[in-house]
Length: 196
Image 1 (cartoon, rainbow, N blue to C red):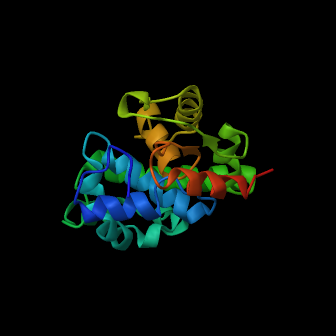
Image 2 (image 1 turned 60 degrees about the vertical axis):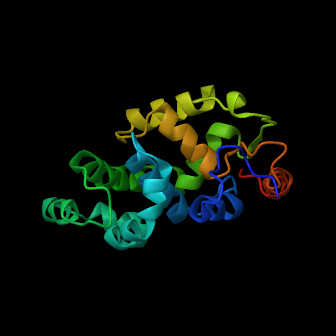
Image 3 (image 1 turned 180 degrees about the vertical axis):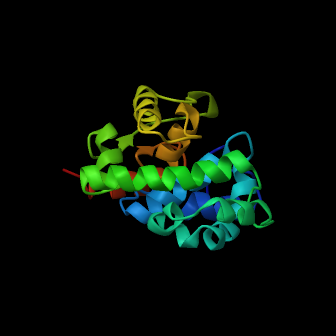
């Protein structure tokens, strides 16, 4: 079974994430919020660290319910700084709480956050045909535009590289290598739904 070259061999955590989640189109607001929290926490760290702490994040951030996280106050941020189940970085914790509030504002404006974010790729996934690691960009024009708009709306810790990683993770972009056993399956999933 051939996987994308970035997946470490014999790393069950990475393999499971790659095989079941990475690149699968995500349209549910709550799941999108989960990935925004996790991707912003990953800034400057390895994705493996975040994967290992994912359950801790789920527990600490109210099951990734943006309405509940938006209600967090200074005492909650202080509590989270002492939680070994997550990455204890004050700026990232405060950004997650802030981003929940901005998330709800966007949802109010567009009817769903999903409609907003998918609008940056025309409502359907971009199906790439990458062949090797050197083909994977750090960012794209779509990610640059989305990141700039998020920043304008007050989101934090979501620069273009992090936003592109989010787009890959949530299937806005199918960046599975063409040689990867998941490329064709994810491309098929991408054809099934288009947001209007």
